[in-house]
Length: 215
Image 1 (tube, one colour):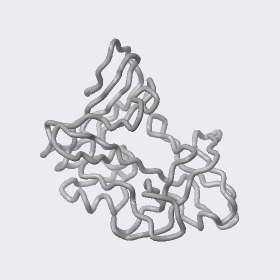
Image 2 (tube, rainbow, N blue to C red):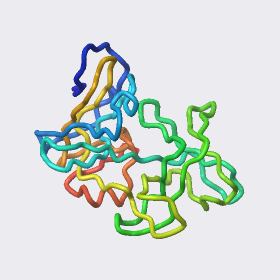
Image 3 (tube, rainbow, N blue to C red):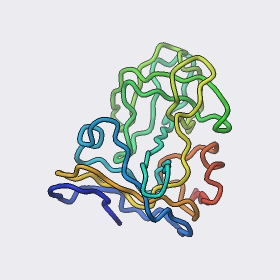
Image 4 (cartoon, rainbow, N blue to C red):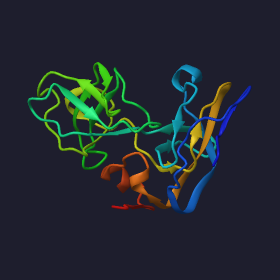
């Protein structure tokens, strides 16, 4: 377990204590510094956990590490529905207003429609409900995985970023932290039911990592 963060002080916080890796055969040991667009403390507030097994893109050894976030439907989306319900997974990144997402395409070069997330509320089960106009997002089965898209639109949209590995250890942000690093696994085997959802299009791009289902 590694916190991989740097700052003035720290205190213990909750994290994912469930083992996820079956084996790790290849790691970009130099790792990378967690991507920050504007402010580390605003983008990664105290208590943020980016769990082991999160898909990420590392531009080079010792470079910039960008998490590639994914979201899974907790309920089937019907044409009459006025909300899209995504699974709430506790320490995983919550979907938020302003995010742009699309159904994970068959391949990373397959285009599709992408949607801007509106008002988000949390239901009694801890899932995230995104308000929509009926049929604005079409229909989708429970368990459908959404990925972050490059822009919103009715067609021609692609995933914003394609991962080239999975995060080796949890990154846990504690009070006083001002930056964070992480190492990326490019070869190994992982228990896929214990990590953020990995769509088939991303799995194809990380073919040296075996995804093992437990159920």
